[in-house]
Length: 281
Image (cartoon, rainbow, N blue to C red; front, side, top):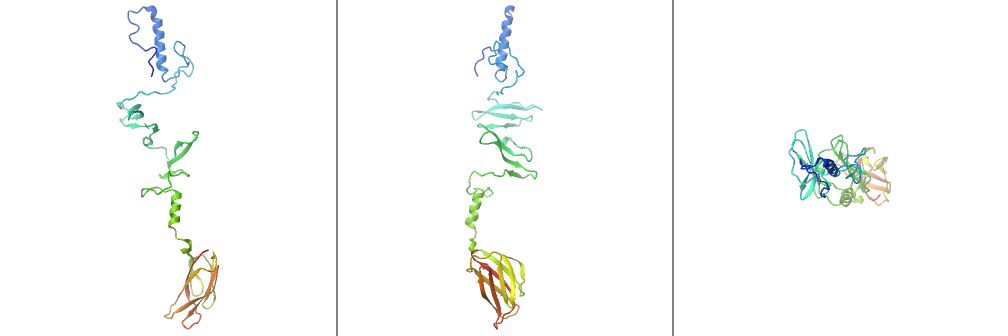
């Protein structure tokens, strides 16, 4: 800061000074006071020295200049201190509460988020947008005391999280699902259990109907048909006797399969069955 044009000198005027020079000393003192005030205050004129300082806004702060470096001040009950302290050869803003707790508010040209111990519940912490004309929401604590990240937030990388509890982005998750997913052709596309009367038991999957055409003769129709008739079907019958049973596929279409169940004697017989089907749809 430049040297003062009219530095305040408490030795002036001297006791031996001519009283006729009193007006000069008063004007010099007025200029010195205005020069000091002009450091941080608006004093109403662009070139105040030797001019009247007036106006409704005169005396308002234009800025606040804090002297640095200083050590932490002595704490005082029921008072707080805002001040500058040298940190790593840079003047940084600090606040000290009445208990003497000193909080560093800035570091290297940035606001220290660590100094913001809390914000209002359900209120987003904000950042200036790229255009510098608005803000973007970052994170908040909701009414259920859970941290909430604003919808549309992105991670800085699409790579593998480095920590077990790290957050993964959608792209990474989608890639992992695709890489580790069982191929569709290996998945069961339909299954059902029916009793000897052809009544479906439970829910099954992708089954439209089960029909008993006659003794030991059943047709299963699929909700979603296969691409063609070149799919695999596995059918097992349930028997309550010691005799064996045989299942034979009579016809197989893209949307249905018909089969018969016979006993050892070769006669059609009503048996409960399990059916699974695999293939391309």
